[in-house]
Length: 603
Image (cartoon, rainbow, N blue to C red; front, side, top):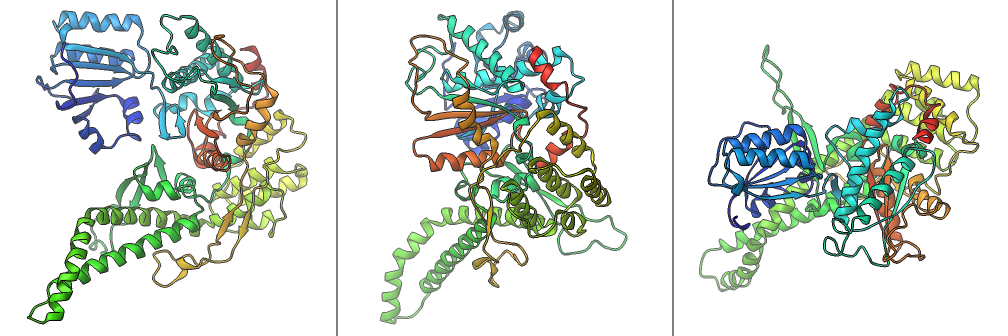
């Protein structure tokens, strides 16, 4: 059996699930630095490379196992390192062994690992469960009432298996807490049972000192499970921070944004087929320092920061050009020679920093394009107006303009924007609108081209939750500071006329409030292994997980909370990540939900 060698070129074979896990974490360059010279999908047509080892990173599905066995029979590679995203069953392992034996390739199968990586890490403090087949565990899938109990069990088991993988990778046994009577409780109970069973098997436990580190510390992580139905307003909310705006208005998934670029200024010849728009993708990852610094900033600050970065780059570029001009001085003039000598070191320094300068230029171009695309949506849809009004609704502030006026304004946003605004009004209203008012609103929404089915669902949801008083979203709100300062000058890349410079106050979502409501109100579900010290101190590390889907608004809310509380770290997770448009499209197809509580109480 050959030992692993980092310097030997290798082939990486993954399925769609493996691709989604790797994509936000590793770039092609980073893979090459690890010796991965070629990466291919498992079910693509692959030619034999008999003198190169292959690293597989796949789910242990029947289809994938069959293809791995086929690769063994075809002798595609020199050696096989099989890494399964979740635990492989004994029967499937025996299938691989039989295929290796029949192909006389037993010695070529060097390693087989259960990696327990069935989740996707998008940030250091954010994860989701899946991107492929996410509709199987979506909000719609969990809340439809025609679902069979066996199907619901399968959905809950899928979520639990991924969460179990998360805690195995984290190397920690959590303290689990959740509200009762919803999907979050079902997940909590099942996860509690799965963790107990693993801890009881001391020989094969994945949480022993040999397998993990730090799980017996006095600071076990707190795991708070909440149901999406706890807060229906935040997923619909128009936002004002950079990352959340990019996710809301652009095609952004797995840390990659795709932009439609125009065909160019030259028109197509008469009678010719019109030029197709170019589609360009950009990675927004931890390696992007501008993104890391400004992804949680209000959009006006981002626009100003892009302009400042551009001004700095142009100054550096002008300095290099000036030094090049000086270096080209001719003649015997002593002053010129002295100037030449003085600037040689400066030019050498400038040239050595050229790669960094080029990288800065690339990032400036990237964020100029992304921010311009976001700004186009803000201006065309008046998203600043929607954000300001929704913040006032959620903080119970007085509106400057009636809701009907905004809904009836043909220039204010899309029908979906109007429906989102009204749903937030309906959810957060201290008193529900009267029948006559509701009829008036419904007519205005219909005239604006809105589909009323989301409203019908939210009415049923609100009646089911029996909210005597609507939830308080805390001291959220905005403070208008007039128009922009720096970005309004004539040399700016961003023409911001008519867009309000709204500065965020601290927005408190119900998911954040759950940290303070659920934690003291509910006893911990998991209390196993007497050797693990019990901690009665306030939590230092917490994982908040939303069953039914989450969004970047809540994530940023928790990030801001962590920054304000020294020594506390909060990780945000959700079963799927959706923007408001994706969420609102799940709602119309849902039937009445009055039996939802009974369904979870039966399980």
